[in-house]
Amino acid sequence: MSRKPQEDSLIELVSASWQQTMDIGERIAAQLKQGSVIAMQGCLGSGKTCMVKGIARGLCITETITSPTYTIVCEYQGSLELYHIDAYRLTCEEDFDQLGLDEIIGIRGVTIIEWSERIIKSLPEDSIKINIEIAKDHTRLIRIYGLEFAS
Image 1 (tube, rainbow, N blue to C red):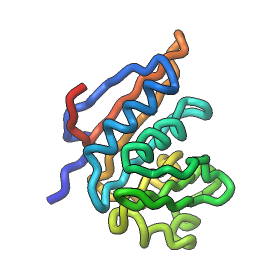
Image 2: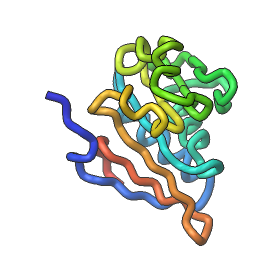
Image 3: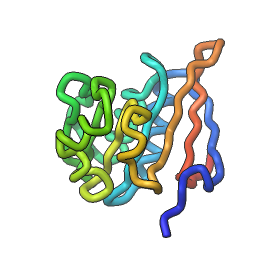
């Protein structure tokens, strides 16, 4: 039986810079395995793509990571394949299914989905959930559900 992220303990971290956000992403990468799915949420400019860059670095990916807003999905090769999906332009769950993205997530490599709240019903129950919030002091509050590592 799959564990639901909300049943796991919450990890809360604060990042004061893009470098710290990338370092946190690299630490997350060390815990990922084939089939891992990360559902990311956060407002525009909160650091979602920066976090993905850190995860990619942790997966030994040397290519430049960019936001796939217009391409919807980017694929990168590293110690594990990385599928970086941006669901911002998707209007409904059916858009996700019609693109065939359901054939990638949870099966091949690691999948990271920015703006995952737009396709919540298409996500596996055991997805790792990461929420990034901009605090009043411009630091980032990073909440991670479904992953265990020392903070």
